[in-house]
Image (cartoon, rainbow, N blue to C red):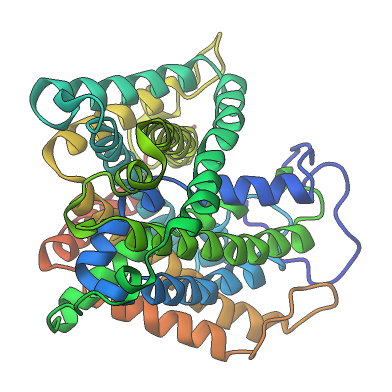
Length: 441
């Protein structure tokens, strides 16, 4: 049943309207937001950014953070209208109706598949620095298949196991990055960091794809509001967590990019840029720690993808869209085991057929549809409900969602024809499921 916005009014009680316990506080929400965003991108994309932007890479990272800030502000504003589950799906459904909400949910699920596939490829690339077979052939298949099957198994066993694994990986992903920045800043060659030759002129499509790759490192923030029904006072705490997260993550990413391009000659050609840079100023021990951090970071984000993605498929099937078997809940483990196994199989097939960069681009193209719908939803919700007491104050009023909408559309149009065709076909398939629902009774 559609949950209507609750402009103003008292903070929500200890249980949501959906019967969920509100057990997650403000600082835990901030931790979840950082954990959702900091993944493979920060470890694997500095080289790609430098290849495309040269000495302007740090400014590109900062500009990407500023661009994402517009989207974050839109999500913060939309979240301040609701205290229930749903995120982008709920915003689109409230603003534009059930079909829009369905399509956004459908595309978010497909995004999870592409994201899981790209992360598995990123994990193989990271491990290959110390175990060369992981870079190609049977070793690559072993790493990709092993990681996806392991995480699928953990999530099938139970959500508590998945949550515990996720929290254990948070420190493992942040500590190596902090050491990399704190030690590396003392070894930066400033002439190398900003004195390299500028890249040749890029056409608009190349520039757009560079922007998509940079934005991939910031992706994941949109997941935070999906579980709003389990947060304390989500109309206040979700906006706080989103804004604080984007400030902290942008500063971290810019510092990482600066150290990488100021310490590693030939950065653009590196497949493991942070580990290679760490070896230059900290030796192989620090490089090994960065490789371990990259593996834990990728596994943490991939675990979150394997946790959330199948829930979208399970929900769609429970509502009558798609085969009934995906609505099945294991009688003993109480998890959507079939949906998890199916997502794992699709992600494995996609991971083995593509590269990290191409799969990252595909996941960003599908993700842009959620960004576009949320930016547009804010315009509708703000006109419909105004700015009730207690809601997030949007700086600049309608200028922020309009700018976010225009930028998201521009990036979508800059995607390759192949990726746009894939998205169009996916939406067409989703439309068929929506048009011919299965009886749920």
